[in-house]
Amino acid sequence: MASLQEPWLLENGNLKGCSKEIRHGRTAHNMSSSSLRKKSDLTLVSKVRFVMLRQFLTNLQEVILGTKLSVLFPAIPLAIVAECYGFGRPWIFALSLLGLTPLAERVSFLTEQIAYYTGPTVGGLLNATCGNATELIIAIFALSQNKIDVVKYSLLGSVLSNLLLVLGTSLFCGGIANLRREQKYDRRQADVNSLLLLLALLCHSLPLLFRMSGASAALTANPTLQLSRASSIVMLIAYISYLVFQLFTHRQLFEAQEESEDDDGVSEEEPVIGFWSGFIWLVGMTVVISLLSEYVVETIEDASDSWGISVSFISIILLPIVGNAAEHAGAIIFAFKNKLDISLGVALGSATQISMFVVPLCIVVAWIMGIKMDLNFNLLETGSLALSIIAVAFTLQDGTSHYLKGLVLLLLYIVIGACFFVSKMPLSNGIDTIIGA
Image 1 (cartoon, rainbow, N blue to C red):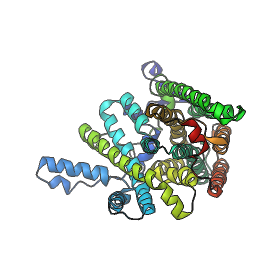
Image 2 (image 1 turned 30 degrees about the vertical axis):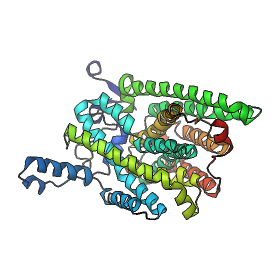
Image 3 (image 1 turned 30 degrees about the horizontal axis):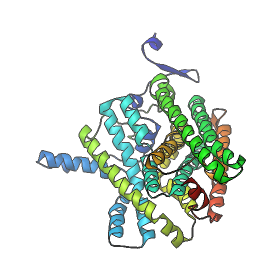
Image 4 (image 1 turned 90 degrees about the vertical axis):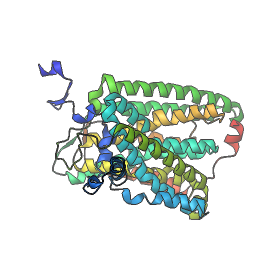
């Protein structure tokens, strides 16, 4: 009779109930980020007499010092000082990139805190919106400066990083740490994400194929742009349907694995800051992310020239690794604990969100801004994306895992990284941009 009163998920012959995490809007992203948090000692703060000051210090300690990545926060003021006093632009780029690392994790923490007050649906929508806020903000600033290639490279790099680096490292480390234990995960969640990734791949490939099949670039430029915009609208509709599927109709498929109350302090039953405090901190963090993203976009070419590394390699490899380091580390930690559903939720969820939401949203935003950005990511980039998605789909088809699967994905990422490292192609402000202008 329990199945008539509460939604249950039959998994591997066992009944699994809705976890505490999903009732508070917690997803795999939140669970992953929570592994990098540390419990704050509020003994000294509690002795402050003034209520407002005590509340501010409590929030400051929970938000700024409540993460293991707090040692990277000094990079933020250093980046601002370097920009104001005209230090070397490669230094500004490096410091800004480091400063974005803890900010991305803190945004996940703040969305989770707000979700305690808003409920699972609004919390899930907020997490879906803010889950890849860093990539979206960097893309918008790059668009505002008409650096279309930087937008495409950074978003492609985020997808490749999640599919190959994060997922590969998680499967490899989880396989090594659990050699004597069978590793299984729920195939249904992986199937849904793989299907959406294949749809995204089709929408990315058609503009390239259309351009290649045309008589000349000049004749196919405008139809390619129109096809890209139509495909972007289709992808956004599919993503909205995916959110309805994830948050309403089939929510049980996307539950984070249920945590025991004493499991390394990961699961928290109560919020540690208030709703308005969390909202104000979230707005403040977004402003700082926007500032650092602007620094990154402005200095990426200077860093490329100074370091002798192509912009494509920096955008596709370095930006995603550093910008999503907190989320990536959390996925690997849960793989060590043999909780692959969370690791897959992080890697595939992020890749799906970027492919089906961030990329088409950038096309629409560029459309509104009068910038003619299309979905033609060129042959090398699109081929890398296609092979990566196909390799991941084959890897996850049987619902089991071992370290060799992870190793193969990692080797694929290394080969792709080497390809873009030796590539010295400049930003294409030439033929394609001129034709599309």
